[in-house]
Length: 466
Ligand code: 6PG
Image (cartoon, rainbow, N blue to C red; front, side):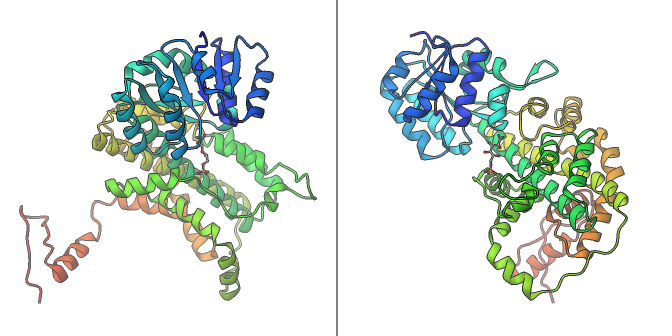
């Protein structure tokens, strides 16, 4: 009964996380029903006093020091409840369960309340960075039971990614804050992935760039202000040869993108809260459109498409870099604005500067931009939108012309750039002191007596329209 940390679910993430814990001088015990996974972890762990595992839940529970710290890295949904029910009879009051998966935030709130009645601490914690992150240092987003987090803090700080020595983990806020923040992280991730893909499409179709040139362009971008994990892996993808046939792998991959739901949840919840996140919305819709491959093939044959107008390659690359930078800022701005509003709605008490800081390394959306974003929120804790930060005005002002030029070029050329155009539209709408929605109010009042307010007088008005 002396292992510091327990982990249930020895899939790639769980196995890597546990090895990471062990690397940091904590002993860890794993549990999975799959014997193969258990055995291979024991083998890879080497020193059994440091890493051990069992298919037997009782052995697992009995091996952990008190209060038990048990992290679940199992698929979100029912499995989490099943695992909790299985462990519950064997746990003691004061033990701690941490859900490290992409659980829906209301599930986390429900589980916390349920386990609290039984004297068990439970909190949700986002973990980002994929398999490599889990092994070498993820960004970790815990929320909920603050006292319980304190017990786990030394382990999480040790295993997390470090940005200039600072651990990319922090207690984020009340209740399901950890899962909520991770959900929005994934929404931003969807947006950034959609944007990098559209820019690839433009460079390839309009600029005629080869995979080698694309590799070089994305590599160069990754050395500049666009530096980010997603731009970096994009550059690597263009250099990957196909090991099954000739040619490059990227060209052989089916253009149907799958999704596990976190991006969709971000959009759905933003709608529920009345927060506009159009770059994220369209990124979700594009995965859905991508799935309609057979229909797309049919439709492609029915409609003509303009040939892209000639464009100077270097000019295109320069505009693409600026437009991508502009759109990345807008994607972060939307996600962060969602967090700001959700924090009020759900009483999370989030500190956006802390969130931006722990996203600077380890996670999928890590980027040089996050350093500037964290500065913007340090300078103003109550910043309503990144676009309102004086630190961002020049960055946006200087890159928006290229976003405009590319969106109009793409529209004329029949190349879909919905993420970029939604980012631009978001920007144009958000920065318009007067929008034509006075007309919508007039229409609503005209057909349904829904009333309207005026710009020049206080009160609620209704007109008998002629
Ligand atoms: C991360 C990722 C991860 C997520 C994948 C896949 O931060 O490490 O967000 O949690 O599961 O990105 O998500 P989709 O299958 O929905 O694309």
